[in-house]
Amino acid sequence: MESEFREMFDQMLDTLPKEALPILRAAFFTIRDGQPVSTEILTDLTNLDREVVDFVLEKLTERQMVVRGEDENIVGALGLSLVPTKHRFQLEDRTLYTWCAADTLIFPVVLDSDVDIQSHCAYNGEPIEITMRYGKLTRVTPESAVIWQVEPDPKAPLAGGT
Image (cartoon, rainbow, N blue to C red):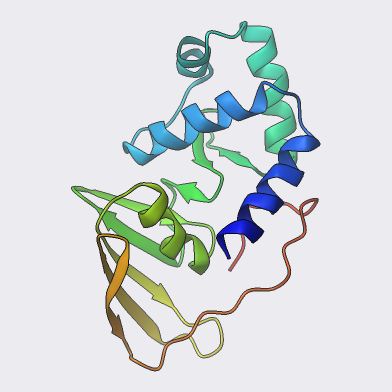
């Protein structure tokens, strides 16, 4: 599954300006730290010109690879969000959210962190709780929970998945 995600990610990046990767990385990790991301912060973190950051953010927003709040700060990037969704996880002392259930299982491994996940079954709405430690599932309630994924579309918007 990791190779499928890497391939999809590479295909998405191929359609974007080369400056998208450092901007996405800076936005993602700032959100991981529990903070919304302003254009000024991205300019400082990436050492890119403000005009370049503005242009790339416009493209990333169109593709829904980032989500901006009312104040135009980025509140979500690549599936990681400060805005509440149905998919919540506790990372250290922070509560974060993801755009889809699969992200709650991927991000703890990407972030090399222990997490407690609360989500809901897309089929029947029942709550699902998962504990991950050292990148491994240590508890799943209910035990019958499964995850499925549709074939990824690299041209489809990312935000707002289930």
